[in-house]
Image (cartoon, rainbow, N blue to C red):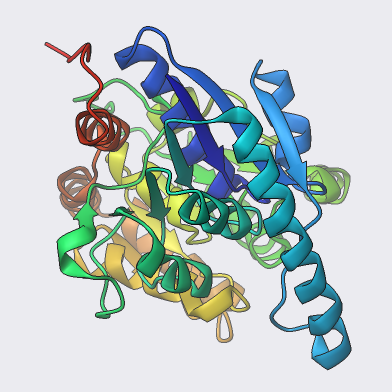
Length: 365
């Protein structure tokens, strides 16, 4: 069996695709996986390092670049569709899965033109424009969260949760030691300057109030030196890292997380049973992060701070209240675990293998 996973650009699109690739290989013995991505996306570094074949397309985003920029990028999109059509003709895949990002559009459209089985994954609460367009051309739509809109046909749609790589999650049923207070600060793989700056104003005050309070701060590579120096000058002991490779350990150690609200961040937090204070990225397309954050808040697993109104004092009070109220933090952790889905990849892969008639599925016990 040959599988094409199309999309990427950012970790939020790429890593669910990686999780699906791994799960296909676990459940089907003879799967060959090929990724189709953008020629400037994160996938150009990650996918070959993981041992998968990568084919790239010359594609960029079309929206938000003015008339002439839109025309130029639209021309690239047309060229990418023709290239994807030729690539799929050479590869002859049994299935094409679009996971979001610029390259998913031409690849899925080319799969439709060739009459190949095809599905897409929508990670966010609010569906993106690309997937709204692609929905009419695919056989299945897998959603990380139940959509608040009616843009996807009900008969095609399955709410499965977002695929998460197993190595990212702490052990199921993890019980964190009572009385310990550890804060995990995340801003996505690139870091978030707003969260970084607010944290530097707040962490020292929290350490003075809570003896033994620990902080793990993922800064992003671009901000590491500035943040590390800021803590050192303030005499504040913080575990500063540009990027966390062992996320399962970080999630397992933490009692509370301060984070942006990307779809995968929210999915990983809830799958890890971790409560959060969320400051959504205000410029996310379609207000996706705001809606993702509110989804987690509505389930009692998070507190959301408006990024346009966030101040050090406001953040301090929210964190102090949670850290000083173990019962509330425990209730939020329980709500987070209840909202999380750990086996989304298995759900999606099992349905896809059954849908295309694959005979030898290795189901879990």
